[in-house]
Image (cartoon, rainbow, N blue to C red; front, side, top):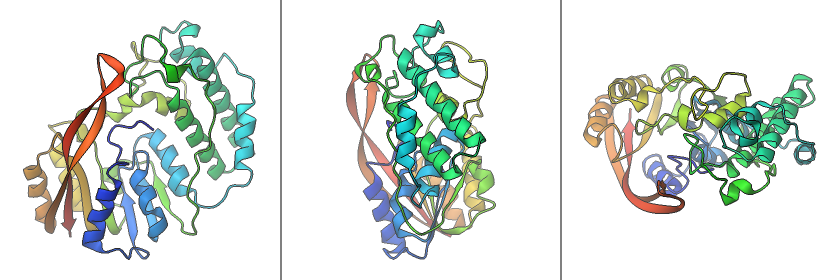
Length: 333
């Protein structure tokens, strides 16, 4: 997925930082990815550790990590269910089409009309199967994750769901095809949560804690609201031009609250090794992070230059490169 803050391109840097501190033998370790997002870091460590604890407050993220991390055994006939969903005739009475497609008269164009109808069709059928116990929890989240990722590929946005484009871009004109969100098979059981990180940290413990909180004032609940809507599929009255639902704002996205929130997290963490990803554009400075973390143990810092891409406001199909300095703050408690 085209995801703000994704650590996919930084995965080797993160893995190397952990190895340099903890060592390469992690088969007996419990690793927690507390702000998991799309689960990139959790997926890196899943095959090489004893247990993953993955968490994210946003429900769409929970769906993704519940599939990619929570699922670890083969699901019988999973692709058969994908094929059945792809073959369903489209309905035109669903929530996504009525509120986020131009043809319904909503004034919003997050998806083409046919793709909006298909999202509704597939989402309703998945919920029907779940309610009538025709599918397991594992299969339910596999199918939901497959729908979220497939829908995201044809979304008519520049990058996030804070706004839609006036005209359908080329990828949004393509027909939505549900593709399987294939997960890694292994023997180990893992835990996945959909909780406030500062509350969950009080109830868990382990060896390695990886932290990737929001860096700036962008609220993920607003930027990815439509993925939450598809995942939850609950009825509400969309607000404003972009059709926002009500959502809880993160204290990590506010300069006035981030330092206190972060210190409480570090204080309550019952993990031996802590690794915090942050960068030079974040609300907290290097000195502020260092000042907090070194109160609770031995502190160190690793840095790398990172070339990220962002959508150009004047031309949605052209991207420009920015160089940021990416930090991994390291703490041994």
